[in-house]
Image (cartoon, rainbow, N blue to C red; front, side, top):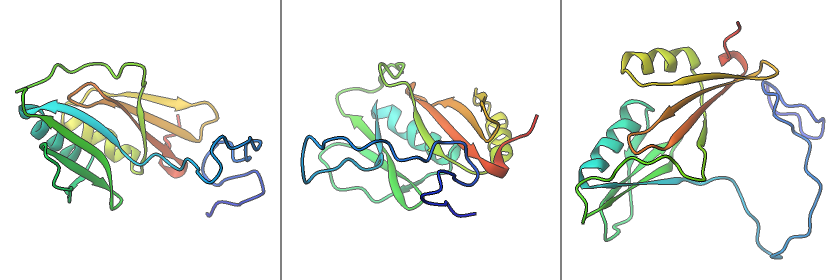
Length: 161
């Protein structure tokens, strides 16, 4: 079912759809859009491990990347480069660190049961959370460099307990 604009209701989620009150734009002529991508840093050994994780666990595809003067990969989902992996030539590996002040990245997904089985098959630790209201479910995983990733599911994908 399509989103119903102006009705205050959205199909298949319990995410509020009312438009927040307008605020003065501190920079007329400029706006902030949707999240474009996130970057994960690693040493030279780490970047292949990261690429393999995003490819084999989350099903992203390695795709075109500008010819920067440093090594790395761009991982695509839905035809867009959503994860940039950057390698540091002066380091063989980097310690996996918690994500600091940034808590997690969230990716909209489909196929809750299939992903849960896939994570179990690959031995990927994960935590499941049902969002109050019963229309959203989350699976939290951590990538090899310590970045917390929320896989967000809605509608028919949400398991019923």
